[in-house]
Length: 137
View (cartoon, rainbow, N blue to C red):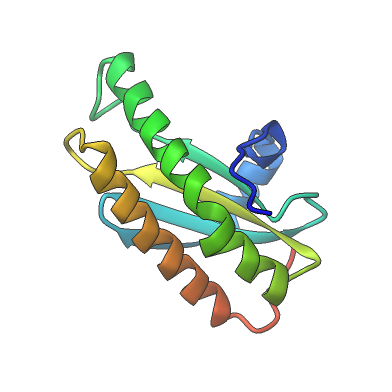
């Protein structure tokens, strides 16, 4: 059964975990996203994600919220088949802290964001396969 939900437990809100992600995490760029990831023990879900759209580029909250909604929806629909299945097989006892930062300069339509999210999640699973036994904090 596919899980097309995005529950509270899957959102990265803990400041301590956010600090760990940004201090000791690994990052890669895939326009229009900058993706950060870090393994952590005992999350209870395969991955926790934080989505960020900079206020510096998009002054109006309406625009930032629109982009965050589009990114969140694209992630929600693709996470199970592109990310969670691989995480459960490769690293069953570890959770992934994930940061999706929008670095684009314009507001793209939903179809574009979905295709780029597909690319991001494919590259992320490829990066995670390179880590045989992930270091955990």
